Figure 1 (cartoon, rainbow, N blue to C red):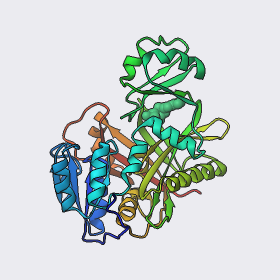
Figure 2 (cartoon, rainbow, N blue to C red; figure 1 turned 90 degrees about the vertical axis):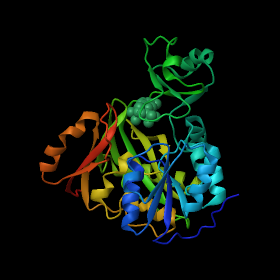
Figure 3 (cartoon, rainbow, N blue to C red; figure 1 turned 90 degrees about the horizontal axis):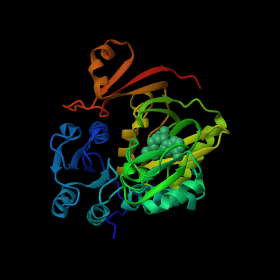
Length: 363
Ligand code: AMP
């Protein structure tokens, strides 16, 4: 049973956010500007989001008593982190409006379910096969051909849990390197570019999309987002139509990032979904009328969606690990907008902040 009858949570209300990272932090900052309070739920003390939120519950995601107390203290529940246990989502949605519905998380937190869902609604994805155990791998590799990519079905992000299989790769150690117990094998996409679309959908079915952007990765982690993507208008239209279709079919209430490959022939294949604000949408804070974080708050609280129009072009660069030590130079650079996440410890591969550089809108 869902506690969501579609009501509006008016400014002054409290938004409960599961997850305490930088996405929660920037959401809480956008929520505060609209007069909301945020209550963070996460297992860590002093999380980046807690520092800017009205309250935090520090507890594991499967602590049902703590989740119930949290639900009692908030008006609506949302997520900045999608890998919360399904049982937590179900419980929360019985107590308080939970947006997006935990059903959406269920689909997107497992790669096989996600790809099966996309295929079922005729959204193009690369060819893939389920691989349930190590012994099934050689046959699957034979069927898809090399190169291909073996990914753990669950809990993968930033390239974790995936191994590329090239013509010379010995299959023996690959299963262990992937580190999961259920896997998806994907045909390798020789893409021209990687792009993403961030889309918001409200309770009334209204949708608003940010322009497709181009994403460049380094060591499997997003490094740079270029807004808008350098793609033909037909490709942009295809990407936007795909994002709308997915948001509609998921009956999404909230925000969704759709990561896609653009092939050398101009086809668009969906790689991954994230039903929350996304790193490739950070540029919207500085370059759009409404940021992805404000849009997220609007969708989750049942407010009218804001204009996603961009007033400038933008290049967003992540500050990963030691990159953050450059903050002085960045601050001295005219027009560079620095965002730091307040993480005390610098670790290799850790997202510490980002910088957005704006330029005049070209198209
Ligand atoms: P993922 O964790 O699925 O987002 O993958 C991380 C990155 O690995 C992607 O952004 C791509 O750069 C690359 N990648 C993932 N899957 C494929 C694929 N099937 N073909 C080519 N590159 C891929």
